Length: 257
Image 1: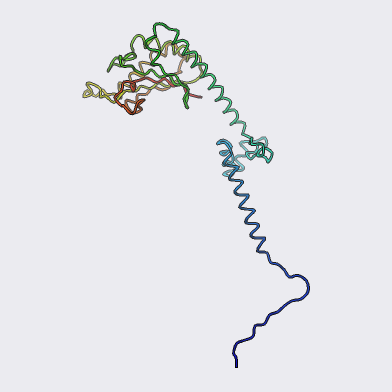
Image 2 (image 1 turned 180 degrees about the vertical axis):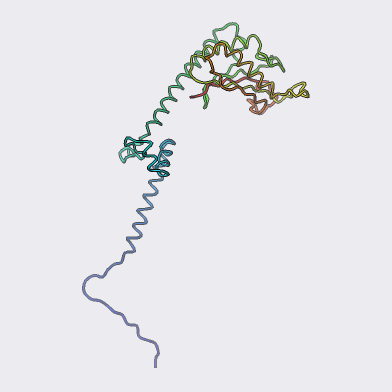
């Protein structure tokens, strides 16, 4: 006899059988993945301030809503997303506008300084060695040394008479700005002669920065200079040639608020 058992099939007749729900699960996964994808793309398109606001909301929803009372939402609406102009918190908008106003003031101050220096015959030798630029952290004015030591004699911390006149002129213009001022001194990598006594490029750079401060203070607003620093040869202007005279300089930074 054949011991194989017969295969029995039960066939239900009438109507269409249930098709199962596996496709629904797959579809739900697909929709979830697409939502996550578009959410990530939206977040990548936001500015830094809005991202921080969203992060703060999810870290402490109740605390965030209390600190932003008035119905302000950190999440943009669909209409705003479509237009490509996500809403920005009022504080961020205010900060952006304040920075724009400061940048404009710095541009005007830069032009005024360039005009005054160019129009001073007694500063003719120095003007091409004054660098004025609007940097990331504020308005920077640098007195970059020349081969003939226009601003400081070699190894000396006191300003030349011409350099002192230049700084007084610069200070008169900077006094019109409400911003604080930082002064930096820099040297090249050439060792200070007589350094065995304990005096080095560190002390020399700091003393030169302080000499610049002393020339500026009489024409600046009270307390406008907030920091004086000496960096020796640690922030070279010409790193390809650490011994080049252009590394010897005094930098005046008018900081953004």
